[in-house]
Every structure is written in structure tokens, then in C-alpha cells.
Image (cartoon, rainbow, N blue to C red):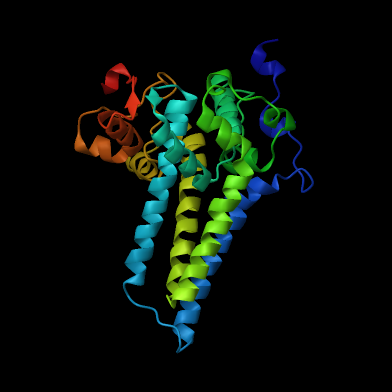
Length: 302
């Protein structure tokens, strides 16, 4: 009996019920995005229905800009988390690491420890039984099932050895819940209070808040669907590039398993390559600024 036969598929081995649902993951994946959409719709309806509230035409492009900015900022957490902290494609100095940590908290993709441990399992058993999100077993499971129903043994795994000495990662992991509450609840509440006391537009503030929440949700699902599912399938080029723009290049998966240590997912040269693989581009920028060093680049991308 070979290893593949002895290991049950994760989608079959993990009990799935309302009792075992991971509600923190459900909130991040569906409940919080739904609240953002509901807030957006409510503010638009109130703005159109009530004479005392004003909707300006320029709110629309401003909200779209915030959605795009939210996607970009979240990717500047998940991209370095994946390429630097996970695959050790280089080193980043602590000031940039602090920014990356906060970006990861904004992205709401779980604790850094769990993120790295799950991804390590994925590379160990890629597209085979034992892979936490094997799209060949179930595309729905690879998209969100593995997030909604967690194995307690997975969550009990300790911090990977190569991250234990990283003070920023240890701090983020220890205070993950506290940092999440501060960034997603307390800071927005303070902003609303300041706007209200200063006589600013609460409807615009709510629209921008909803836009940030929606942008985060787009990045979240583009990552889980674009990387875990479509990244392991043959897809048209336009799909690859669309998902790359939404994930900062993480969905460009063609050569990732061949050379996971690469800081770039497309060749260094070429403006288009640096646009769609902008997570890699930002690592090059950090390197130029002296905030990153020893970046490894796959030979075909150098």
C-alpha cells in the first residue's frame, strides 16, 4: 500500500457539521463580506431616499479606488508572508516586517503560524491525499471548505522552526486576536467617532469602510479560489492575469512548485510582468530601499 492510499483525503477525514464549523473563519470568509455589502447597499439607499443625506457622483470612483487599495494592501501582507516567511525567498528588515504584519492582519487569513503550517502541508502533499486543499478531491473544499472546517491537530501544530526566532512573527501570532479586534473594530469605531464629532460625512465614511471590507473579501477569495483551485488547473491566459492582478501575482502558479523559493513569479524584465506580479515588484522595491536582501529568483525569471 503506497502513501497516497494510506492517507485519507482531507475533505473526507474532517468532520463537517455546524458544531465543528470554525466560526472565526466563517466570519472572515462570508459574514464580514456580507456585512460590507449590506452596509454599502444601505448607505446608497439612504442617500437616495433621505433629503438630509447627499450622495455625490465622485463617491463612486472614490469607493472603487478604496476597493483597489484594499486589495493591494492585503496582498502586501499575504505576498511577503508566502514568499519570504513561508518559502524563505529572501530576508526583510524589521521596519518592513511590521508593515507586512499589519497588512496580514487586515487580510484576515488566519494566524501566521497556521497559514505557514497549512501551506507547508500543501507543498508536501500537493494535489494528493494529505493536501489540506486538494482541488482534485473537491474544488469547493479547496476553495473554502478547508477554511470553514479545521482539523484540531492542524491548529495544534507549533510555530515552524525557521520562524521561531522572528520577533515580529512571534508577536503577531501571540496577539493575533487582539490585533484583529483593534484593526477591524476599535480603529474603525474611533474613525466614525472623529467624523461624527467633527461634522463630517458619516455616509461617505460608511461607504469607504464598506469598500475596504469588500476589497479585502475580493482579495481573500481571489487567493483561496485563484491559487488553490485555478492555480492547479489549466486556465486561459486572461484568467491567469485577472487572478494575478487580484492576488499580486500569487495565482501565477505554473512554476511555483518547481521553484517555491523564488521571490518573483514572472521574469524580472517587462513592464507587464512587473505589473501583474506586483508582490514580487514590491520585494524588488524593498531590496532597492535596503529593506530586503538575499532575494532568490528562479533562473527562468532572473
